[in-house]
Image (cartoon, rainbow over all chains, first blue to last red):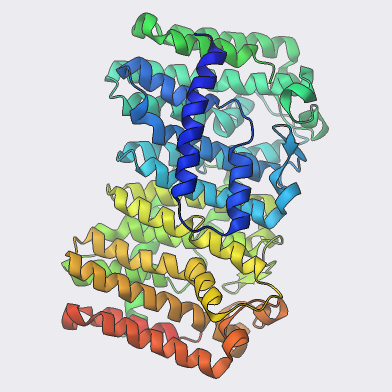
Length: 287
Length: 287
């Protein structure tokens, strides 16, 4: 199966589960329910669900056990996009080919829809009945993870960062939740210690490869493919890999990260092939 | 012990635990760490910690088992205050006698500090190793709870609500998390089913009494006692009990809710006296 087919299959499972979960939530103010669905069911790559479910599947042959974690992590990702797009943050008008949430529902509802999605994510994660999963996700989303990365990102504007500082920023902003996706899938499938260690290294490397590629696409991608304007990073004076080390070296670093990721999978043998495909997809994608 | 002494004792325990937790979190961007502490350690009544720990104590004689839940719920409450104060929401300049977080650190950091606090809250709640606690808190914070209540609150501005609609708004905005405080304390102390049912009723009634009293204090309170300007609800054209049923009937309804709350505690006998004191404190407080 190609990485694209794999992503589509895992996305469909996760979207069905998220829709059922939203429907079952009970009485929610109408505007808020619409805003949550507008963001959650916009077209996305659903990379994190593919990593959660794919990892569980290669370990135990079944991904069902990881479905709540897949939904939870995608909801955390979705909340973070809503808040990142706000006028006080990156002030973006377009996301996944549609107007950003605050453009449609206003800032207040956008802030609250993000908040609600985070709470829903932890409720659904709790359905795994494994507190390790909750802590993994909470720490990846928290002040040393995504929220901290976004603060560093804002503070980096118009500043010259070293490569080490940039790596830390990217790690927090994106890498931590990508690694958590792999680790949650592994833990829920009862991976052995050596497997979990190998997958943790894999997750670390693809997290970096993903964010470097994001930086590159903001320079060389097209608005049509990305579903959002390009060149925003440069316009904001953001610290990115192309800005710090140039485009060519950025591509080299992304490819090296993927190679390191794939190397990490050696102890797992051929059963890890779907993850190898996903790793290549991460740097070869156009959106 | 008076309600005041009880609150101070439980606040001290919770604040010590929250401080230790913040210190142990690991590497956090400096600005974000400062912003989190600025909000979390502002002077507050710490009513929710008193309810979590007090309920656990009257059931099992020991409140230590409920300390992570007490911290988590206070952190959720704190995040909600930060986001409610934002310019896109209530646009408040003063909170607990200090400038609101966005006035000091800017909107972006305020949004992210709120987000970080929510993630931290779920991480610390997971330390209870009881997924019921996580789901209780997540549902109280989510789209049918606090986040939904805040959307209703914004949508109620300049509108005339019925008493039923207002009760639902208040229930979501404040009541749900107050009831969750009582229920988490009870569940962690292994309350029997009948005790949990009685305490759930108690939590429902004091949640309503609390919000009616908040509405009343916004009319008759003083800025000095409240640590924030009074009259904001009327200025925003918000739906409040005094606006809908008048001040006198609001007082009557608050007192009736406290009486119903205290009546709910009958099955627990005299050991529930600290909760009875807290219930009276809720309507008699000046801040």
